[in-house]
Length: 147
Image 1 (tube, helix red, strand yellow):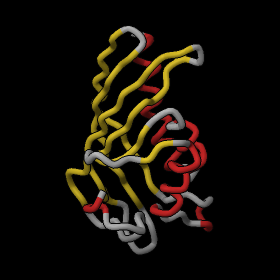
Image 2 (spheres, rainbow, N blue to C red; image 1 turned 30 degrees about the horizontal axis):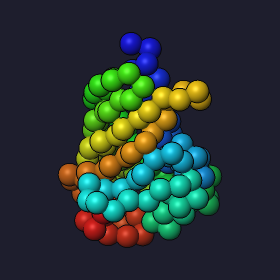
Image 3 (spheres, rainbow, N blue to C red; image 1 turned 180 degrees about the vertical axis):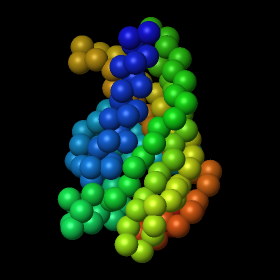
Image 4 (cartoon, rainbow, N blue to C red; image 1 turned 135 degrees about the vertical axis):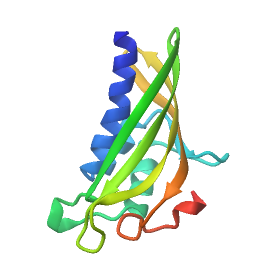
């Protein structure tokens, strides 16, 4: 069970880093992974992933340079196979800005793959499936339906 908890903590760490506006941290967390939507294209490498988040996600300097969001990761299901694992979970992004009162703005699913090496568990793939979209005008600088 402790291996599953280590993996679940990676899911939560991703959410914590995004909400802190630490896109370099997100890149480092996903440095051994490919990241993208459920289509065939994705981004790999810490710098590329950090740049993707910086180019697509609004941050508010007057609020600690964060996106003023709270990413909630729910119902994680982890399946272990030796030194690899897969998981699926649900996410809900809440946001509160001067223009957008607190509300859910995006809901979807994460599909993740992991591997374990001498440094412990790490992401090898993260696919994001957006299922419901609210008002993302204060969050994203791109159209999320193209993701």
